[in-house]
Amino acid sequence: FGLITFALGLAGTFLSPIYRNLTIQFKVFIQLSGMTLGGWIEADRRLRRYEFLALDARRREKVREDERVWRKWERLVEEDERGKEGR
Image 1: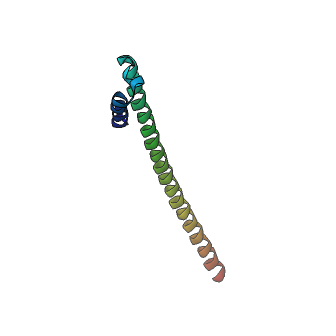
Image 2 (image 1 turned 60 degrees about the vertical axis):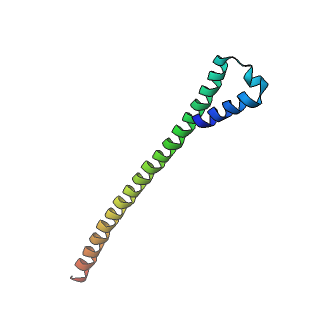
Image 3 (image 1 turned 120 degrees about the vertical axis):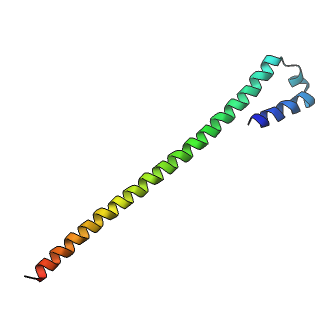
């Protein structure tokens, strides 16, 4: 986003008399605003990706835990059925 705002500022300098007549302070403000916006967008994108990966890892862990409990119950049921057949 820094490069994009730099390119837009450069284009504005050469193509726009309005941008050319702005004070240097305002031009810096515009450049920094664009870079800040880009930083926010990138940080949000990375945070969403991290949240998705963390949630996915938790979901997989829960599935593994559920499978472990299910296998335990299946063993108990099988042992109970074998015990009933032996009587």
